Image: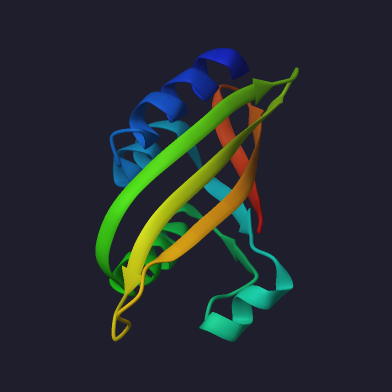
Length: 122
């Protein structure tokens, strides 16, 4: 698949909250994922490598959410071997009574028809 096709497929599945399917279908086995340094404040590693580590990070994040209220996506914006998305979510975290607005820019690098890296900015 081309970068454009991967980006479109990512956007389609993300809009349906199919995160496990995205990782299985679109990611390389040795994908890398980088979060901002402040991610450690919430108990998340700044860097992980490999699909299984990425899966564990996602499960930990989803486990912190008590109620998912909605998501909006912007993009993708595609270049030769990369694409970016803006991901906005509204959630209530475990133990909280108020909703939180989450907004991040996600940048993905593609090689040989698979996502080989992702990096988040928030």
